[in-house]
Image (cartoon, rainbow, N blue to C red; front, side, top):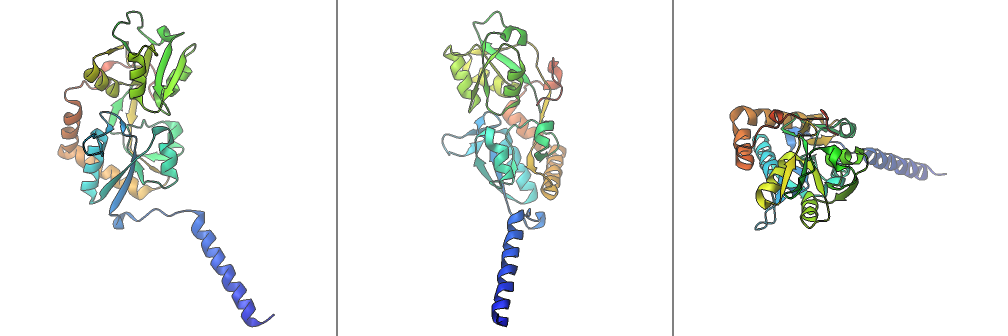
Length: 270
C-alpha cells in the first residue's frame, strides 16, 4: 500500500471523527455574542399569549415580558408559535432557544429543562356554566365531563381525579366553547386565563377555592447556564425598575393576587 493511499485513509478517518464529534452535541452560543433570541410559545392562552388578528403576530403578557427582557439584553426576539404539548420537545431539539408560555415550574419538567426565577403566580380552578348550581369542588366532578388543555398541569390534575371523564384539547378556548355548547360540564384550567375568558364571554363562572399554587417560569435547555443567568438578570432588572409591574397592569389590571385566594390543594402543581 502506498504512502499516499495510507495518508488519504488517515485524512478520511480524521474528517469522519470531526463530523461525529460535531454531531454528538450542539454547543450553546456564547451569550456575549448573542443578537437574536428564538422563543417558543403557544399563542392560544390569553392574556399570556395569543395571536393579534390584525398583525398575525403573538401578543400578550408573556410576549411583552420577553420583549422587555430582550431589550434589556440587546437581543432581537423571534417568536416561534408551537402547540403546548410539544413545546418542550421543540426546545430540546433546538427549534428555539427558550420557552415562555405560561409554563408551570414542576419537578417533572425540571428534569428535562432549566427554569428561570418564577415570574407569575397561578393555580388551577374549576369553571362551570352559569346555570350550574351543584358543582362546588372537585368532589362534585365525579361522573362529569371535564375539559382541559393537552400537556398542562390542569390535564394532569384532572386525570388524577377519580370517576371524571377527561377531554383534552389543543387549546383551552376550544374546551370553553365545548362547555358553552353543552358538550362539557366543567373546565379545569389556570385561574388567570379562566378569569380572562369569563370577563370576555360572560357564559361561565369559577367555583370553589383554587386547587393548587403554581408558578410560571421561562424554560431553557438543560445546562444552558449563560442564557439562564442572562434571563434571570433581566427579570430582576425589570422588577426593580417597575417595568414588570407596568406590563402586569396592562394585561391584568387590578386582578387579585393569587396568593390571597387561599389555594385548597396542591402546593407545587405538576
